[in-house]
Length: 131
Image (cartoon, rainbow, N blue to C red; front, side):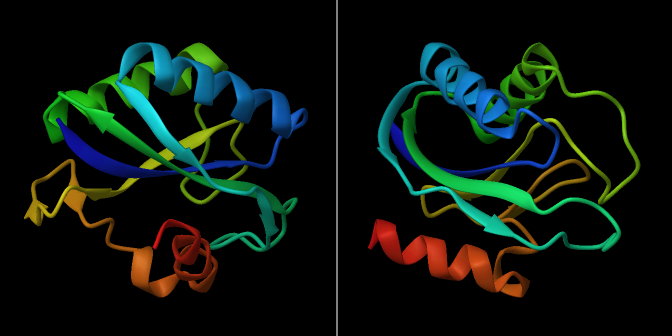
């Protein structure tokens, strides 16, 4: 079992319902939830002309490999109701792998730690809950 930190985000109504459903499915399909962080509201990143995001970190314990976890997360996003959108655009739900144990990796579809983690102050602040 490894520990993973995921970032959830939503800026489409009802944001809290999308996020609650994602947390439930993560628990059912990826492993055990160890900690659920507080939800915060943040300004959009990338495309500024859209609603603010509701964001939350969760820590899970999983047996899935990084690529298996990514595949499952993409299925969860679809099941929760994510529709196709432009990069950085509005999203019903977005789930990112921020850290996967102590692994550092880069592949065409997955980089760990998440490449934007150190560019987003709100993520760094939220991570303090997990120390």
